[in-house]
Length: 67
Picture 1 (tube, helix red, strand yellow):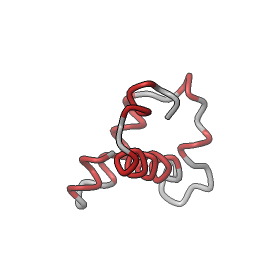
Picture 2: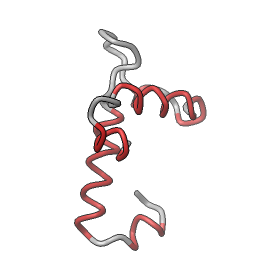
Picture 3: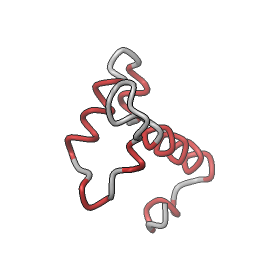
Picture 4: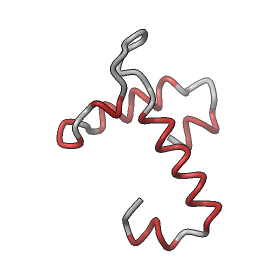
């Protein structure tokens, strides 16, 4: 959210993207886990974490595409 690309977006797009990012960070690492995606250090997160979030939202096409 500190990137130049994000800052160049209009206010509504920024709100939407911020909302998507925050929702993704609140996802549990595993079903039933108290640990959430936000507990994964950035250096250890990657494509596998993003695929997990995407796959969990597969039945909600717009949410899966946004994530």
